[in-house]
Structure formats: C-alpha cells, structure tokens
Amino acid sequence: MVSSTLHIANQQIEEALWSVTDPEIPVLSIMDMGVVREVTQDGEAVLISITPTYSGCPAMDTIADDIKKALKERGYQSKVKLILAPAWTTDWITERGRKKLQEYGIAPPMDEASDKAALLDGERMIKCTHCGSTSTRMISQFGSTACKALFQCNECDEPFDYFKCLK
Amino acid sequence: MDQSRYEYLLLLGDNSMILGHRLSELCGHGPSLETDIALTNISLDLFGQVRSYFQYAAELKGDAATEDSIAFTRFDRDYRNAILVEQPNEDFAHVIVRQFLFDSFHLPLLEQLVNSRDETIAAIAAKSIKESRYHLRFSSEWVKRLGDGTEESHQRTQAALDHLYPYLHEVYNESPIEKEMKKAGIGADLATVEAISRNTIEDVLTESTLMLPKIEPRMVRGKQGIHSEHMGFILSDLQYMQRAYPNMQW
Ligand SMILES: [Zn+2]
View 1 (cartoon, chains in turn yellow, green):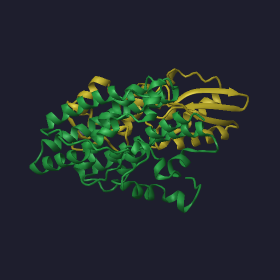
View 2: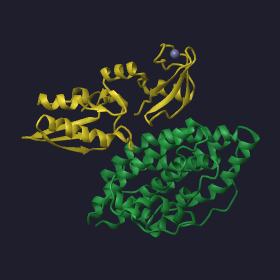
View 3: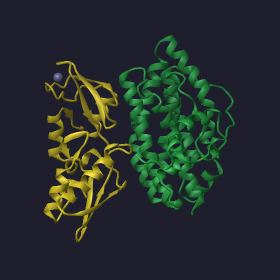
View 4: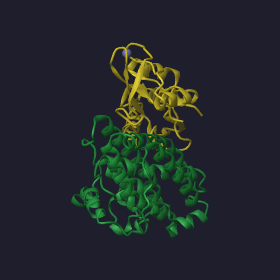
C-alpha cells in the first residue's frame, strides 16, 4: 500500500495526519513522505502505523508525538506503532512531495540508475535548486542528514542538498 | 526466554553499537566538515539499527527490559561485539579502514539475514541493507583515495590495514551462538559472508595500490565477551549517564 493511495475513511483523522510535518523538512507532510503506512480505527482509539525513512532518523520520535498531539486536538486517543517491513523507499514520496522538496531547496531523488551515475560516476545531472543548471557536482555523499547528499552548482556556485534515492 | 536468539541479537547489535560509538567520538572532530557529517551520519544509521535489534531483544527478555537497559547496563563480559570495532580512531586512515573492513562484512551479512526465518530480524536487515550500501560506498571510495593518494596517505592507510586486518578473522570465525542460529535458519552463514567480503576487499585494495597484509590472524574472542583493553574506556563513556542517573530516560 502506497501512502498516496492510503485510504483513510475518517476525514478528521486524515486532516490531522496531513498537518504533521517532518521536523527536518517542515514544508513536507508525513503523508507526502510516505511514512504513514496504515490507519485503523476502533471507536475513538486510532492506531497509526509509521515506518522510518532511515533506521537512525531522529525525527521519528518527534513525528510519533506530533501525530498523537494532532489527533488529540481533534478528540482522538491514538497509538503510534513503528513498523519496519516493508522498508521505506523514496518511491513512496508523492509527486506533490517531490515538488515541495524542490521548492524548499532540496533536489528530489532521481531514479536508481541516474542516482548511481550522479553519486558514483560524477555525472552532471542533478538539477541545481537555485538556478536550475544540471552542471553540478557532489561534494559529499552525506549532507546535513543521512538521507541527503551535498552538491554544489558549477554555474551559480551555490551549495544544495540532494535527496538520495533509497530502494 | 529464547536465550540463543537473545544472544544472537546482542551480537548483531553490539557490533553496530560499539562501532557507532567510535564514530560518534568524531562528531565535531572530523578532518573536514563533509567527512565529519558523513561519519556521524553513519554512526546514526548504526545506532538506529541497534535500537531495532535491542527493542526486539527486550521483548524476548521480558522482565521490564528496555532497549536502554540492554544497551547500557551490562558488564563488559556480556557485550558480544568483535574486537575489530573496539579499535580506536588513531588517525583518519584507521577510521576509514576499520569502517571499510566492517562494511565489506556487514553488507553480505545483511544480505543473508534478509532471508532469516525470524521475521523481525529479516525486517531489520532489509531496512539496514539500504543504509549499509551507502556506508560501503563511502568507505571504499575513501580507501581508494587514501591508498592511491599521496605517499603519506598511502603509508598511513597501509599501516592501518596492517593493524586492523588481522582482527577480521574473528568477525568471520563462527562462534557457538552463530553456528546454532545458522542451523536454525535464523542466522547467517558466515562462510558465504566471508567469501563475498574477501572479494570486496581484494577488489578495492587492488584499485587502492594497497597490499593485503601477510600477518597471522589475531586469535581474539570479543564475540564471547573477552574484550581488549579499550572496552573499559568505551563503556565508561557509553554508560556514564546510566551510572550517574540510574534508569534515566531522554
Ligand atoms: Zn546553480
């Protein structure tokens, strides 16, 4: 089940979940990240299953707290369960989420083959989020967080993050 | 409780935790901002994996055990990590070579664990494997750059290899718990893991112009709880908060 097609019967719960954002990418809802995997409801008790992007992602605890808070504000008691399988992939980021990443200054993940070419073989194909040039180079495989790599643009000289493909 | 499975989880988790701790010592001290961030990110990935292993171990153990009590309140003899990951951050070459040797082993290990009969272990492995691929990529690129770099970087990397490589034998060498878990279809077959790891090492060293050391393997038994003199120092740091404020929580 992919989060963009995740069906949530209760509109209030859906709204609550859309309002929770990734604390490290505040423009991006956890729904756009594909982190919410399942929602079940039994009266006023709601069970939300989420999956971590990376094992060590420090944002997961905050996200779980924020989900509970958002639901409580709407009168629901909830439990958040962390599930590991199937493992998260960047394919679960929605099209809308990719646009938001780009606007925020993080180049969205490319497909697996292009990602490899850009990260390993130094191919110039990741689009600079400042000027749009594809003449860019990798500075570091790990950027400000494990999910990103650090790039620099050869045209405008500005650095930017690239969200690495995770499959 | 399933004692063998519990100990196997300790073995898997402790390797990642002690290496993760070594890497965390570099936070703010890396040779450049980029490598500093990369190494700390790898540390964070490893600690994330440890949390998954120990949450599961705590479930098996019961008795109000938690991931924290398992991570922080054991005696040194009860830690199951290999001696390789205890080795200190002598210089950047040591950090990179230690990481590379571990990654060359860790990736094929996870590839096996994905098929574990234990669903939770299989799920943790499937998650970790994606991260481990990036780790191996990072460490092998650096081994090549240092080995095939300047005279000094080459010499230091060769020295790190001569120091660390003999400890790899222990990592490959099946301990009684690993043997039992392999037979039960839960654990990895270390012979297969070793073959893949050795291939990776050979390929990368050739490209790095480095020599595989012809040094006798070290007969150490960290996986059975017999640790090096470094372990006490590591634990005094790692366990400090739990000693100062027992049962504290973040
Ligand atoms: Zn630019």
